[in-house]
Amino acid sequence: MSNLFSPFAALCSVGFFARLSYALARSPVLPLFALYLGAGPEAIGFAVGVSTVTGIFFKLPAGALSDVIGRKRTMLIGLLFFGFTPFAYLWVKDYNLLIVIRFIHGLATAIYGPVSMAVVADIAGKNKGEMLSWFSSVTIIGNLLGAPLGGFILHRAPGAAGPSLADFQYAYLASGIAGMFALILALGILRGDKTEEHGRGLKEAFQKFISGIKEVLSDKRIAITSAMEGLQNMTVGALEAFLPIYAVRVAGLNEFQAGLLWGVQVVTTILSKPIMGKTSDRYGRKALITIGLIICALSFGLVPVFRDFYLLMITAAFFGLGEALVQSSGAAFVADLCKEKHFGTAMGTFGTIFDIGHATGPILAGVLLASHSYLFSFWAMAALLLVATPVFVLTVKTDAEA
Image 1 (cartoon, rainbow, N blue to C red):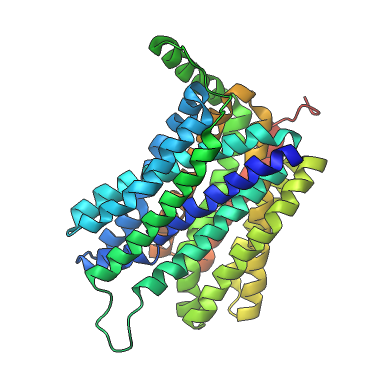
Image 2 (cartoon, rainbow, N blue to C red; image 1 turned 180 degrees about the horizontal axis):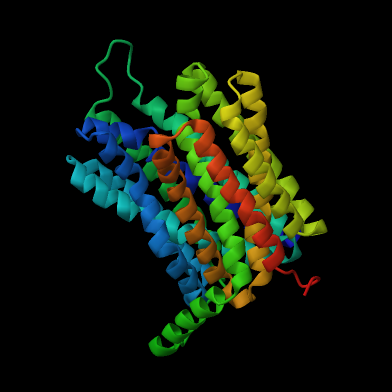
């Protein structure tokens, strides 16, 4: 384990600063910047969501590319976008240019995300669940710190008219500095990448790229397991968008309490992931994914039943626990099912479906809520998760079951 600790600790450090950089550029800086540029509600929502669209299109190709040219080399390409793209925001003066840069900035997570997970899977051996969970938890902490830090940079003295263009530029400068720090740290990790293959012709490399995608996509166990993660992440996206609104407008809580509800869910996930990942390494992943899906479905369906702050907080904590169970085991299970030479493609497939679920959640919840109650809308989405769970149990067989 001592031989794994140093590169793994470095990977976690890179992941922390990369996600800190991305969060600094995203929330609350991005929606407020779009508002400053004169965007309406729909346009602000599009600005926030367009980077997820980038991930849907590019995560699978990026993962497959890493199987051909090397994981760490591909990871460095993603970190170049983390390091340099934030500085492009300094030239933004209109909404259309903001959208273009947001789409390009999305390449950072689209390339880096699945490839960094594949790098962790490469070095983890039999401890994939534990190490992927630790890595995920550290990057989530980067995300958590980025949002308040961005808000602090934008903060003005009482009575001021709000953030100026210079304030937004300071925030994006901070994002760029954090991204460059991640890039510099990664340059040390890049040395001695044993997964890179030299002397490969362009035609041969392209054939391996296509064959890797075909082989992974033809494995229904990988597809279904990734779909379960996507469905679970659909409820995460819906909760992220509408739990604050439900808490304030329906339950009658204040904005601070609404924020605490989401914070409890995230903190529970962070603290539980490494424990659940280690448990999945020891006792198996399929059972934990199944239990997690059920907990997420039940707790998600209970949200519109309660209006009391403490009951909602307990419900949010249980949802965070279910999320930890699914996410700590899902990526590791996909890696278990996949051949090592295709880890990148598998993580790319996993990440693409993950992003589709996250993008679909708020949209589906919004469509349902436009004509139905919170109770009906949340129960319909919870039912979808519950119905999908036995499909996963019956169709995805482990080596012991085969």
